[in-house]
Length: 256
Image: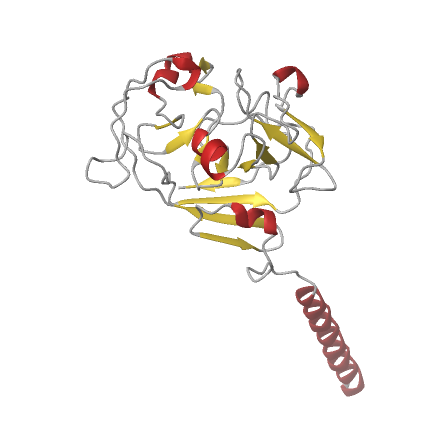
């Protein structure tokens, strides 16, 4: 009996050690994301971000979503306030909506490795991407299945405006970026799926028309920022302006 008990005891010890070893091995093979990884250079062009980090899976971008250009939507006490009554997108005369720009605390998580997703998730109302100045990109709708035609009049001289909670955003070409900070053919930002957004011209000056783009409002070729080529979106002067029938890739998230 003593012998049997000793064998049982040693069997338990061996079993326990093996289980412990297995658990330890499993634990050490888990890859923990690190915020100390280098941020791809192209993302550092987002000069309006308060921070940009890379954990190996996502680029995390934090922003206050405040345009760095003048707007009648800033409070009159703000140095960037400027009254405006001239033309806006499509040539209509500007009419201010009742909203005002409010500082946000937005966090974008964008996939490090953008890849096509055949599900092509629909873009939601609200932010679908981020511009170089930290301002949100919105899709082509004013509301659920509502075209922008009724809202265009409220776009300021740089073609942006705030919604009810004060989130300033661009539905169409962000004119301050395409004429001051970048160019009509330059990089303007990223959508949540990690694919870049460019202006309404190609690098050779050719105007981009909807017919040159796919149903998601993009196409693939080399750019200065992506010499090996990549899928990318373009702004155009016709609906859907930035995005069509959904994200080309798998979208990340935004919280604010």
